[in-house]
Length: 209
Image (cartoon, rainbow, N blue to C red; front, top):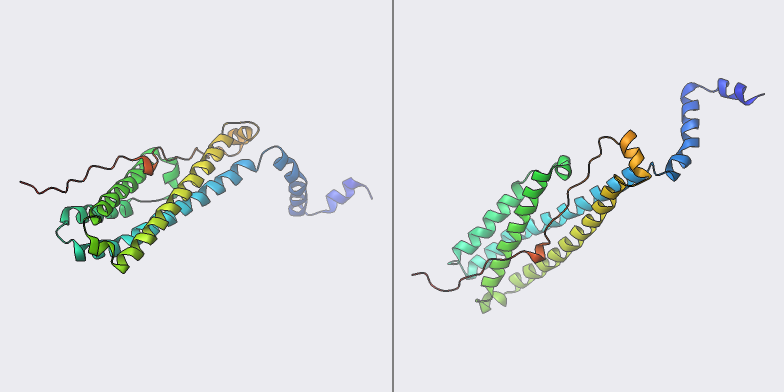
């Protein structure tokens, strides 16, 4: 029996599946899978960034209440943290955010403002030895420091994943597939300012008036 006879005897769906199976190695070798693979890695890295920012947001209410118990008159600093947390958690995080420069910038700014507010709060804590020795505060501080470290790692991994993905959209051979197949794929937005490089406003411990 000839190969033509065999192919004709196969149902059309089976024939299509067979052709696709034969083509996949070729497509993979010429970069067809590069863009979707890099895109999924970037999305996974972004999910981890969000997870760590949410972890930080969840720690803040207990941290604020603990500090308030020892330094209730530091109202302005405490309220700034609460406000910054509210703004950070209100930013809408949709799948389209990664391709929207304005939305991504709003997200980045809200998280940066929260980082600054937390830095000022922890600076104020230095004036309260009893608070610094409080076991609940020490535990919260340790969790916050650990979370900040995980945020830094997650951001670094995301920055690298986006660099790889964005590069695949404009370099050969994957660029060819971006032009003819993955036409809806756009570069992802990336962080432009490292949070540990942000300028934190000076804290004035003097009395007004």
